[in-house]
Image (cartoon, rainbow, N blue to C red; front, side, top):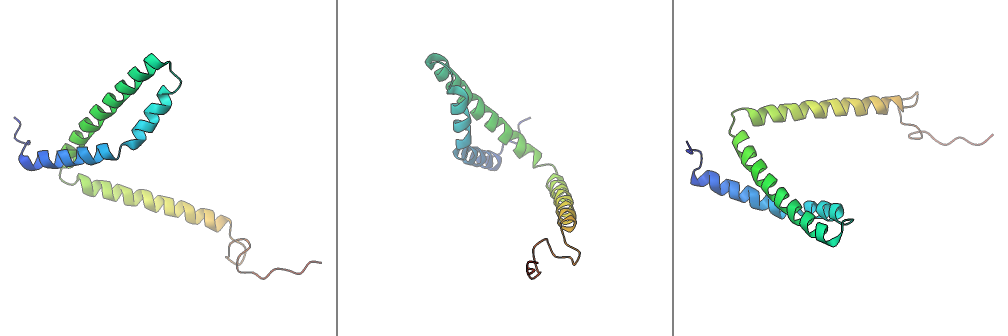
Length: 118
């Protein structure tokens, strides 16, 4: 039943969880901002609940992610999807750049000598 809990998997999971916890400083900022307007008694409780919830969720998400990455082809599918999104963004940026180009193909204000007034 728990044959996926090998030493290598547990070591990788612990490493991911520890790295994730170290990099979770933004959670402390968000929890602090959310609790700043509360009275002192509620503030302490809100901070404690926020830290516990963030830790539990990060551990759960790390475990789910470890299992999802075991699915054959999922990483390749994600990479292909990311390439498609990048291509669409590049195409949209090119269309915007073409819309702002002057009649000679240069961007407005680029590649032309300034005119003399009058």
